[in-house]
Length: 481
Image (cartoon, rainbow, N blue to C red):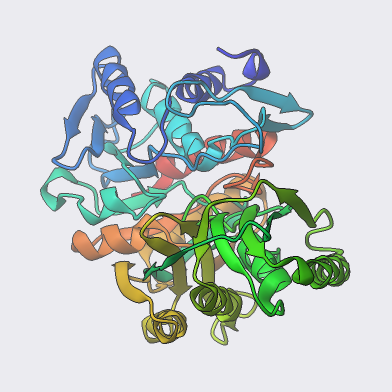
C-alpha cells in the first residue's frame, strides 16, 4: 500500500485503490487490471466471467436472509485517462501512479490520478470483500475502454448480466443522483497536404499555447476554460502568409486540450507582424480568461529552419477551419435548468506526413442537436478540402424520475445524510445509457464522490467524500427490496 493512503478508512477500500494505482491501465491496456480482478475473485470465492470484449463480471451471493432481494449491479470502468505534466518522464505503460495526500485530498505526482474510475472499482471491491455488508445477490460490472469510446459498454453481453438494477459509480459530485446523460458522436478530419521547399532566407518559429487547466470535456465544458488548439489558431489567424510544418495539440477525445504547439515558416518581413499578433492575442486572452484560466500563456520561439512546410494556401485554409470550428457550450438545457444541452470539444490536432488530422467530440441530450453540431463542425473542414467521417455515436440516457431505483437511492440518501439528494442529468456521457439500451428492463442511477479537475494533472479526489459514498452505498444495498 502506498504511504499516501495508509491509515485511511475503510482500510480495504484504500488498499484496493492503491493496488490499482500500481497497475498501468490506460484505455486499451486493461489486461493487468483484468488479471487483478480475477485474482481478487478467486481469493474471495466469487463467481467471475470475462466476456468476449474483455469486460469482467463478478458475482457474490446474497447476505443470509437477503436471498429474495433483487440482484443489484455495481458498475465502473477499468481504464483511466493518462495525462502528464509537460516534461514528465512518467511512462503510463509501466510506471505506477504515485499517490500524494494533500490534507483531505488525494492527487497524483504530475499525472492524472485515475480516480475516474478507479475509485468505483475500489468501492465495489470493498463491498464484495466485506462479509458484514447486507445485500441481495450482487454483481460488479467492470468495463473496458470507457474513456476512448465506451467500448466495453457497447459490447456488453446481456446474457452475462443477471441484475436489472444498476448503480454506476462514475459521477463526480457527492449528493447528486444522475438519472440521465448526454449522447455523443465523434468527428474525424483528415486533410491531405502538399509539402513545399523552404527558402534559405525564411524563418521558422514554434508557437506554444500552454498553462491552461484543460479538464473533462463533458463535466467541465461549462467552466469556459480555454482550448489550447483554439488559442494557438487565434494567434496566427490574422497573419497574412505562413506555412505550417508542425501541429500538435490535445491528448484525448474527451479532454479539453491544455497545450498546443504550431510550427510555422514565414518570410523575414512577416516577423514583426507575427510577434505583434502573438503579443496582442496573449493580452486579450489574459483579460478574457482571468477567472476561468488565469495561467493561460503563449510563447513564440525562433527555431532551426526546416526543409519543407505545408503549402501556404492549405496552411491558411486549414488554420482558418480550426479557428472557426465550434468548441464549447452550444446550448443550455431548457428542460433541466443549469445543465448543458449541447457542446463540442475540438480535442486533438496533428500534422503528419500525409496531412492534418483533427478529432472532435460532440455531446447533447437531444440527439438531433448532437448530430447538427457535429455536421456543422464537419462542414467547416469540408469547405477547406478535408475528408470527414463520423464515428462512435452513442445514445443519450433519458431521465426517469419515477424509476424504482431512483426512489430507493433518494430514500437511502436522505436517511444516511439527513438531507434530500439533488436528482438531475449530466452532460458527460455515462455507460448507463448504452447498457440500458442493450439490457432490456435495466434501471440505472449514477453517483460518486467529489472529484475535481478529472482528465487533467490537477485531478483531485476528496477522501472524506469517498468514505461517505462508500458507507452510503452499503446502506443503500441493505434497503433495496
